[in-house]
Image 1 (cartoon, rainbow, N blue to C red):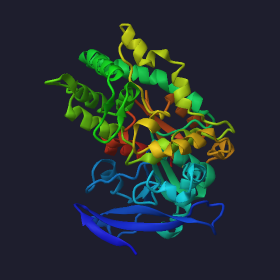
Image 2 (cartoon, helix red, strand yellow):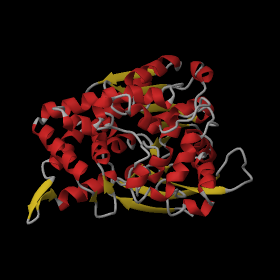
Image 3 (cartoon, rainbow, N blue to C red):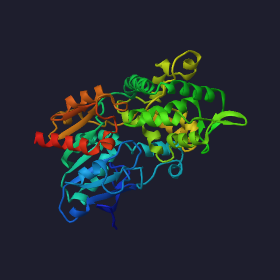
Length: 433
């Protein structure tokens, strides 16, 4: 059963689908997918082409917007849009500490989670496409990890695509997780340096907070244990358009004076726990490194191992000297499964996933080299989350792919400059046609 309702300027329809957990065993267990159909009110009765939106992540449900803001408003001028909650996210069958024990123990949970990568997501899309479009190919818009999925789509089922539009999400086709993080830490250091150049007062503020955390046991109101490494991980916001400003405003209200002396303020702690908790997206922490697993090697907590190769990120060493504290970026570490109450019951499951060596290939270089689907990609000049050099190397291997390389936006350009970004990319498609 579908349910339609209205918001300003749009008609929304809730859609649910049943798909196999393992597409290689279609007769086996099934899971549910949720997607929200969106169409402009004045076009609701028109026969429009479909645009499938794949969210970044992994582990995040599709955007919950109101009306037709940003890129969505631009897309609705010519498309009927399907906002898919990828398996395990949003209203689709969930995967987290509350539900995974239904699978059994950690080994069963880890086996289950091997079916939540890009290849399974692509096969989900193909399973529902006939019902949604009547069998016609659709345009896919993939943001960040959604772009990884779009690249898998071009590899596994290009016949399902009319066009592929990728924003900040052209993956390396063959890089191991270690290669990804060795490229990432220097980029993160550049972003931190740019932040301190803009807000030099934050150098001392960050050092003061780190020193407090090294000498105090701080537990946030939700039970999250705030270590100095957890504090450093707030640097993940520095890759977004407004992230440097958000971090600055957070740091400036860190301390408050009490009868017992200065301590971390309630306001600071409340904001930090919301930024650090994986309660709303546990799948991100569980399978993040597995999106790079495909060469027979374990990921083996890659970000944690590679971080040790960059001693400037060691907070204690920075404070012992006269160095600024370096924040970290998009990386998952074992200590997160000790600090975060939403992840603590899943530590053994995460360890088992990190040790796996049987990841299947996500991309087909030969098929991409023979690609016939129109493909365009926005590549951000110094993207903190997806290495620009890796993206451009992939772009050169996909036949017919056209890139728009820009430093006007950060990784979330589809959010901060949505209509302009989508306009530019769709124009590239039409120029190629």
